[in-house]
Image (tube, helix red, strand yellow):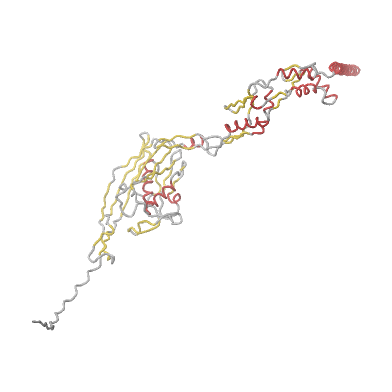
Length: 465
């Protein structure tokens, strides 16, 4: 058994040695036969050049490869073409022929033998050498870059009255100039001559999907209150507060807080002096008029069908607001808030007209309908009257400085319906105290001067005759 294994090993070594010797002999024969000619199996691109000298191969390459046609620069669905003539493209025929001749000659002895064998058995492809005018090529590529490069742009909501749509995002793109330029020489020798450009892309901060996921789909509510066109402190305060609220987004389950969004009402924050209610009277104060903003938003929020969390009434009844549907706020003390109980985001947008201000609320299509009952007014309380002397008035003058308002209680029933089902019902009770009437009167008239007896006439009249 041992002798048999030894014989097999010996036989295998003899066969291997024979193969090596035969292959080596063949390669030596090829070396002698081909001398300064290109070895068998070598091609320049698809052009067979085996057995040719460098001069012969150069001529064949020059005849076969012409700088005609176009190079197609491809990026996604964009395609730009460049004429080879426009970039001064030229085939380097001799360089290509020398590269073909170098196959099986440019490495070490065993590497060369391996290359010759592979070329003979499987074929060996050499790329044709091309060059182009660098200045012209860069100029053409810059034109393509101008068409591809673009900044990233966020998707955004487009609101036109009651209609809501989305402007899709735009990805950022920038051509990698040097890497794309390096691909030109590769494309010259190919039939397709397509270059896949190297482009860096990036997403904007807000994509189209991000905006869609907010589910801001339609206008849910709109409400406005009248406002004097006069550019006084009160109007300026109202406009400032509304601009602070404008664009606020309330996510599902989140709470809107008036005082948190509007912030402190200070002169530093831009608020002006205007009448505020204090102790049942209208007196000058920073931020006067803000309660009209709260009242306007309160009504818009109710119409949108969301639950109200915090709401307080004015101390006395104000007839210019919907009966029983006003709201007051005090910086750091009394807030107005509501909660978004929908599965989408709510968006608050304001509008300011010459004689009115208002809010629109947008959000998911919940199918909700808000229904108010007619207000029930009862428990009237008469107002009292107070007279105050005002020395700036003329004596006997009488002016109503503050009109009186009767106290009362107002009840409004609010129902929220969706698809014929009642989602919410609340009884809104508003209790208003009387506002005192204040009458300013001038000071009392001074007493008439005392009468005095006339002085006897002692004057002597001389008559000249």
